[in-house]
Image (cartoon, rainbow, N blue to C red; front, top):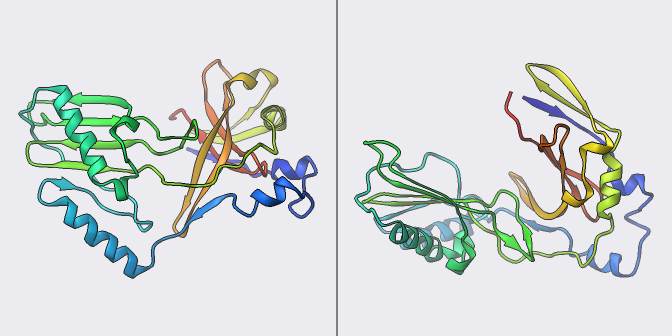
Length: 260
């Protein structure tokens, strides 16, 4: 499954220049976007030591190179004799707060349950709990689902929320401009065979375009973009999400929502 989509930034199409605008735009572009960098080796080792001191024998977690709770690897599965949903949920929430330096969760009230599964089969009777995306300044932060598995012997905690980062005070690219830019363009994708979807006026509803935060991650940085999340709905259901930076018009990412 492959998508190929390379286009110039919307700001260039609209005639916006990085060197031209002054005033408020000139001020906040010095702060935007916030860029996170990997910790130096000594700092990362120190962070891992602090994490290990909090884990003890019950908690399980790892760090990524940015000093944040990691998400890779297999979750620890097993058996749980606990039957009380509220108790299991409380233990998991308190676990994320316990590791707040690395999970980014300061208050259990910030954790909204997305899914709870208990007892996959007679062998796996653990609790698997997921939480909804972090919300920052009223916006969803892409990719920040938290996951946990609770057994009688361990609590495995995965993924993180982000701390403070800069939000621009206004949009250079409006919601309607972001929409109009994509109308008439093609999405090339591969679903068994090379295919093309032509985006029509009916494919994108302006009222369904949301402002969100998209952390664009690479091995050497996480760039905290504020983006328009544009659903492309050729058959009444979202098939793709297009993420366009609200300041530069840059295409940040495109997600294909269906599996071939």
